[in-house]
Image 1 (cartoon, rainbow, N blue to C red):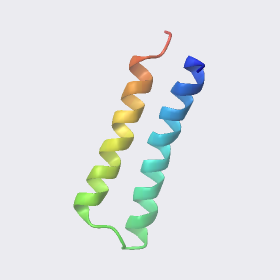
Image 2: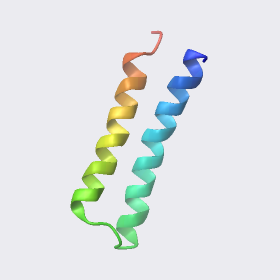
Image 3: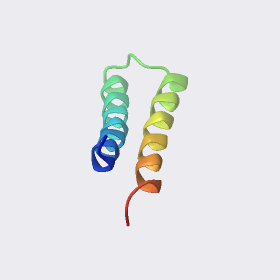
Length: 55
């Protein structure tokens, strides 16, 4: 697989987790532990993407 594609996938996961947390929080259907878990997955995904970037 292309390295740039993998980086884009990890960045997309991070963005999606952040958006999902905000939306579910606005709808008041998420508890704090679940929100922290989703945000943790998002930050980890973005971190992996940044560590493996070609800069």
